[in-house]
Image (cartoon, rainbow, N blue to C red; front, top):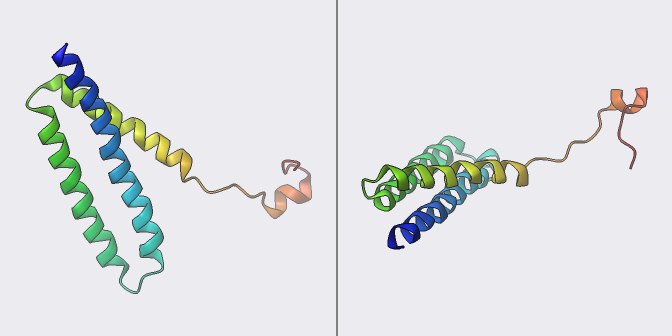
Length: 105
């Protein structure tokens, strides 16, 4: 029973690490694009996000491959969720509107 709790905790931690990593990436892109020094934003964010993520993986797994697998699975699932949530709206192009292929609203 104790191992099951540890595996669930590893999965939840993987989701949390994914939110930190990919949410931080999304935030960095939004801030870095309008910054006067975007390279500093991107590099600093990369170092910080990778350090947090690797430290989290190291601490949670405890040398057990099962925990690593579940933590990594939660991390990857979060990637797809963040990608879906931060996807820009698709606006029909002028050509699509002219040819009548634009979605009706």
